[in-house]
View 1: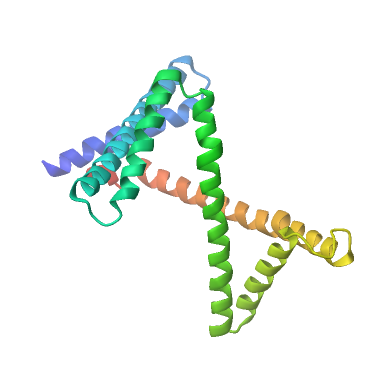
View 2: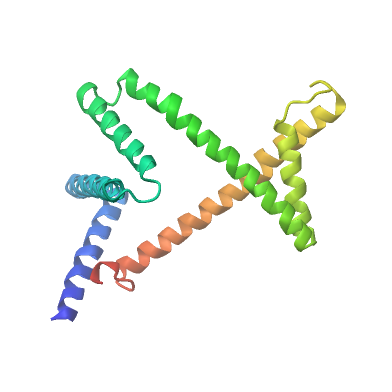
Length: 211
């Protein structure tokens, strides 16, 4: 019976994937409507999954607050803001100025602070790597980090000198050429991996839905 279950779910997955792909490449109203219906089902399932994730988050922090485990005040603050933000969004809608202010003046500064901490951690890790393993890659990593930091940092001697302008040009060159090329390479690799995984599921080689 187990093998028949695998065959059934493989048939459903392959048929669904083929219908969605045909909806993009075949100009047929019936197939187009089926593709839209399947995508709407997928959107509903994603919303349900998000709701379950939020419920799990609430239960974990509720247990931590109830048992007064280590760090429970942070969980209490998270639950409080969760209730307030959810209530405001449900009553006034997601486009409410209060919700926008909460995002602009709380969420964005917190994310910026975390990115700054990440940058400092990367620089410290780079210096440690350079001291422990002195090779070309380590020196390039540390040198690139220093140039980018100096290119973004304010200069005491003024912003119109040769050194500040040179650091600025190097920073722009590194971030807009080398960094952008690396990011695009990573995105291309992710896209190729996604295509490969999708093809393996369509061909029923991988069956994550059968476990």
